[in-house]
Each structure stands twice: as structure tokens, then as C-alpha cells.
Amino acid sequence: MFREHLASDDNTPMCTLLGMKKILLIAIFIMSSAENVTPKSCSRFWDTSSTKPKLPAISIGTVSPQSDPDWIEPFPPFKIAGNLYYVGSKGLANYLITTSQGHILINSDLEENVPLLRASVERLGFKFTDIKILLISHAHWDHNAASDTIMKLTGAKYMVMEADVPVVESGGKTDFQYGNVPASLYKPTKVDRVLHDGDEVRLGSAVVVAHLTPGHTKGCTTWTTKVQEAGKTYNVVIIGSPNVNPGYRLVNNGAYPQIAADYEKMFRVLKSLPCDIFLGAHGNYFDLQTKYARLKDGALEAFVDPEGYQKYVADKEQAFKNELAKQRAALSRSQ
Ligand SMILES: [Zn+2]
Image (cartoon, rainbow, N blue to C red; front, side):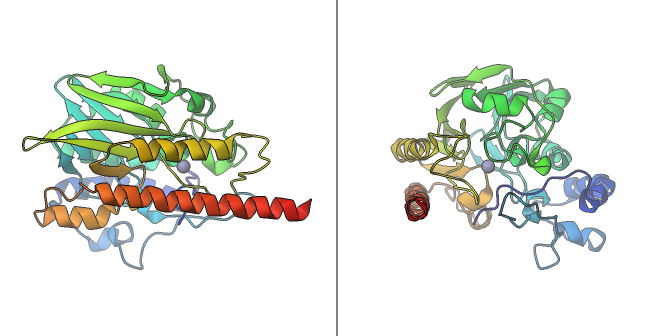
């Protein structure tokens, strides 16, 4: 499934409605217990059944992906392990790495997600304004559209992989695939620190390493760190994205000539990373909901899943190879 690249148009009726209900929604979210509540007045935004809100689909070339209401659906914030916390929505993953010197936030999401994100951080007992560093999985709007807003609210420094910096600073206009899709654009955001493959981001006792895993975007970044829990040390991998989106041209791509070679590099990198705790830019990469349910049932190591990581990467590599073969065959037939 490809659920990554869907509409985030502030002018849609849905988003206007969402804006009007935002304050109520967040107030209820803060007051609720660890589990989601389903207040009747807000059931459109809380229910996980067939009454999900419908966001509009956008058309990208010949592709019209379905929109995903999970992106703006609240999800309980929780500790994954050590100083690593999940503070995202049901569909868009955000991670908070806490230290005595302030916090690192990974991903800013859509503008609509900011109140929810803030409520999640505060519900865990941390100050939103203590976020000192903002990182992203890759330069697509579902992960970075609200970066400027979050930087203004917190004063955080924005650190982005070099090849994604022009996209971020152009507000998405230089993206090789979506640069001409109005719904994919966002406020241009100045980057404070340009990152390169292998660079470390340090804050307090936290060390987070940026791995260039290109293909999905030119600067797609997989983050690794180590966390300690109950006397054990775990290797954490937060995958940037291994997906070939609908409409991506893997052959004869004038805007991204080395795209296929970059995907191959990305899979080599992902397969080489030691992984205990498997995470990613969207919860569906690593089956967030199932693992969270197991965590709630007392399985403290619910997110420790080295086999699941290897299987996920292998499955995605095979999907990439299949798509590449298909596109190469189509090209040779047309010549
Ligand atoms: Zn993406």
C-alpha cells in the first residue's frame, strides 16, 4: 500500500471543519485516559470504524492515491523504550528523544497535526518548548509541512540531509515527483544545519545518526540511535521510507537519473544496520497498532522486532525489484 503522498490542502472543507473542531478535539484528547475515547460529538475524528473522515484525493499524473484519514487521527503517546517516545498520530509517526538538555523531535507532519503533536508531548510530561532539534524522515509534506510552525513555536534548530535541503527550502517546489502538485507544497523552511551521510546529531546524552537512504526522496534519511531500558541497550532504526510511490519513474527519469541506483544503495544500507527496535516514518511500516496493543498488555519489548525489520526490508526490496523489472520491460517493448 502506498499511503504516503496524499492531500493536505488547507482550503478543503474537511480541513476548515477540522480547524474549527481542533480546540475541542485537543481538549478532549488531553483529558482522556491512556486509551482513545470516542465522544459522540467528535466521532468523525476518533472512530476507527467506517465513519472515518474522508480527505480529498489528489491527482498526481496518472495516479490518484486515496487519502488517509489516519494521518490526523489521534493516537495515545507512549514510551517505546528508554528516552524514546512515540508522539505521532495513527498514520504519521513522530518520535521524541528526551534529554536533560532538551529534546529532539523527528518529523513535523501537516500543519493540522501540530496541536495534536503538542498535546502528545505535554501529556507525557514534557514541554513542547523544550524541543531543541527538529529532524525529518524525508522531504515530503506529510513529514515536514509544519516544520516552520514548530520551529517558531519552539525555537528548535532544523537539521536536514543535504539532498533534501533544496526541496525543504523551496517548500516542495523542487521535489522531483511532486514539485508541480499544489497540494504537496508547504511553507519554505530554512535549514539550520545541513547533514551528510553518517553525521551525528547530539543533544545532552542523546546521539542520533543520519543515514542517507535515498530513492524515495534524494535525501531520504534513516535515523539510528541507542536506548537503554532495564539494563539492556537496544539499537533503534527509524526507516525514512523504502517505498516506490505510484507514478515514480525508475528508468529514464530526467529529474532523478540515478533513482534506481539510489534505491539499491538504500536497501544495502538498511540491510547493514543492526536493528532491535524497528520503527519508521509511518506506523504501518512496523505495525504500530498491533505492537502498541501488545505493549499495553504488558509486553515491554513489543517494539523489539529484528526479524520483522529484516522481513520488511526484504519485502520492500522485492517490491522495488519487481517494479524496476516491469518498467524496464515496458521501456524495451516501446523501443
Ligand atoms: Zn514520502
